[in-house]
Image (cartoon, rainbow, N blue to C red; front, side):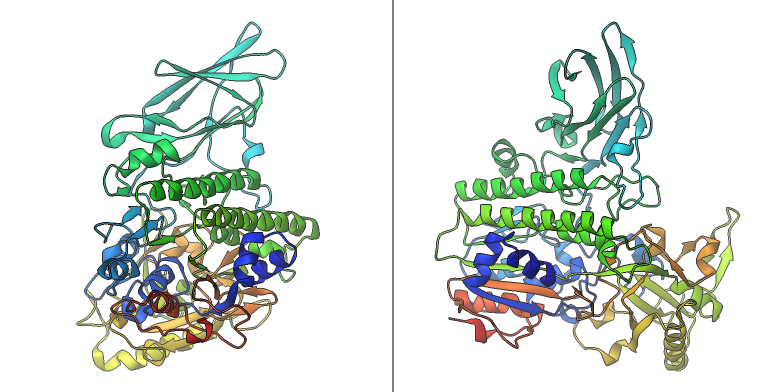
Length: 606
């Protein structure tokens, strides 16, 4: 968020980002719709708007499918889903060698001679073998996110006393591991872990080195932390998510060198999450903030090390990299900084401010580590894809549409309600936030006659605009418009018929995966359309690209620095995010990406 960058730079906490700004320029930039991760990292790398490239959020509906089908297909994170050329392909076409590191929508690789490591989307599970695990005696309060009042999943363990010490066993089914652990109670206790003929000693608070289990494609990497160790009543052992030790790098075989020099690629360390509810496979972190920041620092250090490995393997002409920490922090904590939030507390806000400042410092240190390996002729671009606004009110779009008769549900034997596509004239998507008409000839099993399309759209817009906050009496919808009133492009078929956006503070996500789907809902979902919910602390997809509230902003920012960049403020400039790669291409003296509809920001050129 531009606000935090400026605040922490002024406080002297971001020396590397501050230096880049002083030696170049800082721009507020406007993201594409919807304002989210797959969409805008694609916009950055294609130089094209989402109406052109067609990567529309996480769960895009496509004409000709059943209404609910697209909710369960994560195709937008696949590099081949974009209809526009990516900048790394442009670079290679013009004789330059790209390195693509952990970039959303960057996998599978689309370059021949460059490097690609990972890249699907935060939480993408192509290489993940298991989610994080927590083993504990009793309830692991010490590892729970007290600020959000949530507790993680854990596996109970039993300590067996043995003279002056004891032992317990950790069973990790996904990895096929059984870890025998023993300790002696003398001085500071140390945990001895034994498995597969090896031994490891950990003190309280200590992390293991990277460990490996399994063989072949099932060979996995993971780390263990002895989070709390006061046996026999307080023992908490944390095991990170386990990722495949191979298959995530191009060219093949690069993994072994990266693992030996920097450690394994484990996407998601910057967004750790251990669900305490099977309906919540991802979302705002429920781990203690200090543990989250430990993960984040490990991941930041890994990026620096992986970059050094790539340089040692022959180097590159352009490094294109993504790091996701700040988005996870926004989703978890942002609302606790807003005095408008009914749950605002001064002491909690101070704690959260510390989490934010440490997170930004980790990012700044990572940037410094990367720049140490760059020469003075390097052009540096530091950018975000979007930011976020605080939220604490959950809105059920389905409730409003069902009460108006535009959506129909049938009750199942288990008490859930199932969407009835044969009687519903509209259906919503939440990632992205679009509304579709169930149109005959376009949708599989569509029921709305083409002659009734316009009246159905208008009825849906009227319902959206009528959703009000029962306590404040205001509308929760900032804007609801026809798709045709917004933009046009080669991929407009991937957008719904109605685009709508919430007022700040309101949100369509309560932290559960179910709240982002419409086809099977709990009965309570169709009751009150607007209720308070503190599960999600910040969001971005639901708001306009330029929306602000107090000091908080939803737009992105971009810093250009180094070779080819004029030094000084870029007063009055507010370019689009799609202008970034055409501008870099201009600095390199090569054409913009083939399908780019962005513009060269000529005002910043030296």
